[in-house]
Amino acid sequence: MPQLSEGFEAARLSAVNADIWSEGMTEQSEVALVALRRIMKATAVNVRTVAHQTGLTASQLLVLQVLRTRGEMLTGDLARAVDLKQATISILLDKLQDRGLIERRRGESDRRRVWVHITEQGKSTLQSAPDLLQSSFRTRFSRLEDWEQATLVAALLRVVSLLDADKIEASPLLDVGDVNDLPANDTTPPIR
Image (cartoon, rainbow, N blue to C red; front, side, top):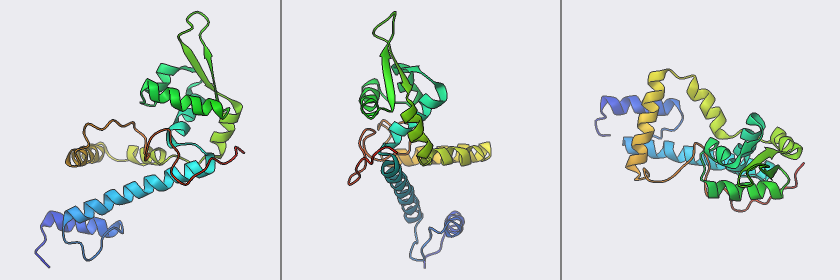
């Protein structure tokens, strides 16, 4: 086995403790790729679980959560709250409204303004929905020391750069695929 650097040995020991090390891995890039793949798989599993149990995408579930927490909102404010474009939120809201999970109404004094609120059926759907992966991530991340948070953010931003993904638009939501599409091979179950 080639001589490992002190930094690589520290990464190897950390990876061994996280059960992502395989004896055949001799380069840090392999450990990093395995870690990235595990993040992608965890995200995909969570998206499929949410879709299977609720018939909703992670983005749709997030919108319902925001509406439950903040109450009735203007469409533009809601789009900003979940970090989605106006056109994307409109399509997403159409789907939620078709399922009876939200209702929209035009403003009385300014008909261009559209207000959105969650229905009782939407609240009921949220009650039975599994947690989104980013919820547990945020909770655990917030428990880290400031220096560790900054280190992780810097490392993740560097990974984004290494993957030439800096120009890809994304919201703070762990999801795969289009924000309005259910994962392949999943069908929308009846609302309970």
